[in-house]
Image (cartoon, rainbow, N blue to C red; front, side, top):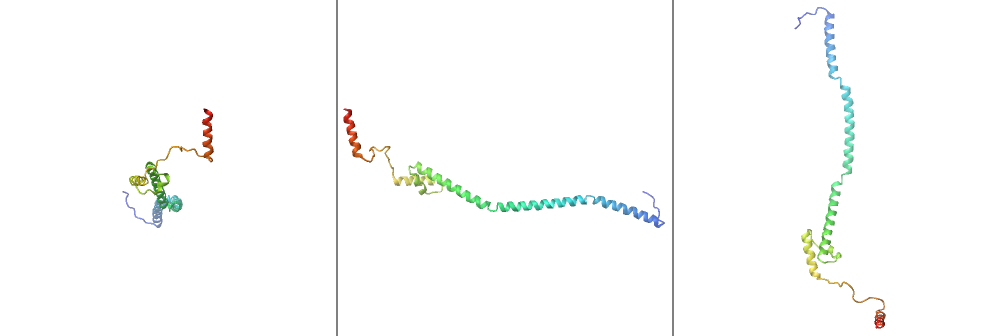
Length: 154
């Protein structure tokens, strides 16, 4: 450690105070040297935050009815699935397509059971594959023509 020397003149005191002030100023300047950079960075980040908050508000506005729309669409899909199950059950039970909406139930088993019960109430419906009687506007004339054809062949 250096040996202490007493200060004897005002100039020496001013010189020592000047050195101390200069060192303190340099320390303060070095400590806050990046102040302008931090200030500019802060302004940039503040601007980005404002932009992000505006984008978040816009997104919130855009998707505010998302949950309601999603539940509505899920309800429609459920109705379409039920309708498809009813149609399938009606056709497999031998019911006409138009009877599919009269079938009750919420699950596939309930729908199938109701379709079979409904088909049992209606009973089997046997439809002929082809009409044995010819249909035309003048059936007497067609019958006469058939008899004449039979006579010509003999």
